[in-house]
Length: 253
Ligand SMILES: NC(=O)c1ccc[n+]([C@@H]2O[C@H](COP(=O)([O-])OP(=O)(O)OC[C@H]3O[C@@H](n4cnc5c(N)ncnc54)[C@H](O)[C@@H]3O)[C@@H](O)[C@H]2O)c1
Image 1 (cartoon, rainbow, N blue to C red):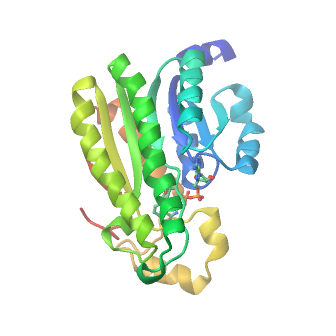
Image 2 (image 1 turned 90 degrees about the vertical axis):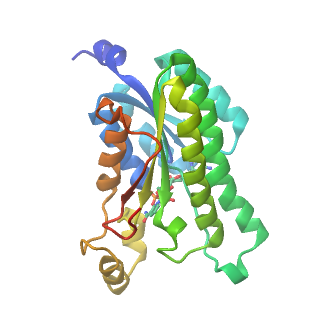
């Protein structure tokens, strides 16, 4: 296929937090499914790596450095992407962050930061992209949540609250956007062996994680990515408003 043909045939998907970890794997999977993928990330170093990749050079990946909490930048960049590549067909709200805390020592400052990225940022991205999708009468949104929203892993309360918020928001979006041709689903992710996690955890800690699943294995980024790609695809055209747990059974809906 010529470069020009590939440019005209690829539909546009947007993946937030797509420059590393699970997001990077989702980008790879969507490119393989013939999407052109806009990779949105706030991490300048990671986005520079994306910019240097063969996928970016061929035009199947479009790196965009911005914070999903910046509504002005999100509106500007998603409009520019649509002008350049056609309307957004799929959005994956994957960007997330957390900071360690227990319920008794959670600070207001960290609470606000975690809510701003994991919940408000996902809302801003979904609203701006969904306006394009609703106008086009088609689209798929996949929001990434965590088993932490269900009390499965201990972690900061702000993260659990933000991800629980994402799940409630997803259902509301599915109800209100369904009649406009937009499907919205949530992938509830369990412990997943990103390069960062593997570099930070000891063998003993990884063993405990393995034992917390029914499969006896820690998830791989590709496990999440394949599910996301399915939910974006026409094979999932009758699936909306669902929570899908990709956690080796750490959490069962
Ligand atoms: N890895 C796990 O075990 C696990 C488990 C449950 C849920 N999750 C969820 O999966 C998603 C991906 O996690 P990961 O482990 O790959 O994390 P990661 O930290 O490796 O990647 C997250 C990416 O999001 C980007 N990001 C953070 N804030 C942003 C912002 N304001 N604007 C744009 N980009 C921003 C980061 O720069 C980073 O590239 C997150 O939503 C996370 O909560 C991960």
